[in-house]
Length: 376
Image 1 (cartoon, one colour):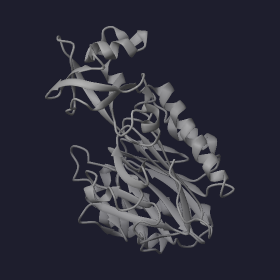
Image 2: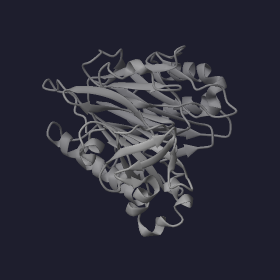
Image 3: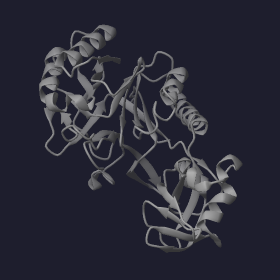
């Protein structure tokens, strides 16, 4: 397997930036042409997307060009936000892109907009979505070197085994409690206490007063299934809900309605805990990978725009942790508005879209014994 990446940025969204990225990646890989190319562009390219895609296909001598517009892009060499940039990953010698076989192997999926409902139960998927930026044309997606009218991209990494991990970045504050009462978007009581008292009781002292000024650090987490909060988080059976405001009657206004009888926990998202969660996710992936292969050939990473350099104060610690854990590994990634990953629910595998998460896929050589891809 031969894989390489390149990231090129400039002052203007010109196709030449993407062409240069392909040239650099091919040279790194020692290839004259590619079996497949993943191409992600920043929003400035929206008006020139097809022209850029065509230039990439011509340069790579390959019609299997897939990807989309993202808020920002990155490789193992660095990241780019708020500037025109093209990030590419080229594949050769035993690895290529192809039409997905439903239900068999994880499918790389990327959406321009919201998560398509039909992706929920059509076999394991991983990837991301981007809803677009103000001032630019709608988010675009491409496959087989052409813009997708449905704004959806679905490709399979042929000849590859894919191990997937999800870092939610959440640090739970205690176990889930049963919602006692709610009124519209206002959560009134859970676990026998008012919503605000329940939250204050579990918050670190530094964030406890005044709570109304610290809500951006905290989120409500709706749990699904059995009353085991940490199992639900590890298995992806959770749904974060932002807290909008704290009210004089000690209720909390949430971004979505919750109903009496549902299980809800409180969690905090801070840089130090999110980085620790990313390390744990990668350790689990590495342990899983060690059972079947020596090392990964590359990684694909889909991060939230609220989780990258803006969150970590100018550095992307999630990317740094990945590069530290797997030195020299080719990495291609995007910052978007949603992340797509499979979750386990009994014997079934369902896909979901999350926010403020990092979905990491380690790609390695497929062997004859690789019938089922692992999900961490």
